[in-house]
Image 1 (cartoon, rainbow, N blue to C red):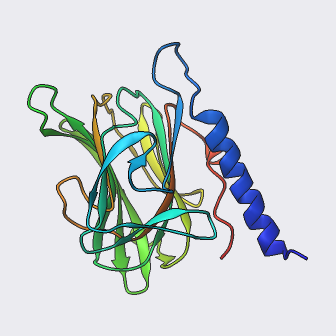
Image 2: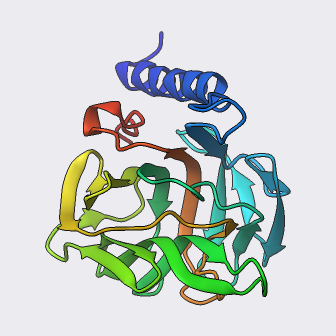
Length: 238
């Protein structure tokens, strides 16, 4: 007989599967980008159907959340030839991940615009970062378009390491806010112009510094501001 914990986990995974199968191809404007895109980290050779470049030896693991990619915090990373929120005027960026410790500053998910002429990274970027303190971590998210930016970092909102979490950054056109497991960590006013096309790094910053120790299961990119009630299901208690 299955335990209640097993039932909860299976239900969460079923919901994630339904989201992945049902929302990846929807488009708000015919011929335009999909309103919602899901990247599942169950392989390393491509993510979300996009070619990847592999740095180090990230590996696919089994977890209570399903397959995930684990990074060693030293030199593991994936680079994806796509910026999933390019052109978005408003957005919600979610991820399900497990931080395992490591160095204090870890810039583990980075969306970067590229200059269309030179191909160089511009100052327009979106970042998920963490700060590790003792046996806990807190969220640091950075949103920037050109010279305009907003960093949200609540040093008092600390969470235990080695557990699965949902994190989100939401931009509604006037304010940007961030969340851990549906609980707001910070909010601030900012006017962000849409990014142009670019690329993404996972496991490190785009310039290969501040490597991440832990695992990433899933990311969802939505071209509108979601409420916490619309977020991906929270990871089941481990």
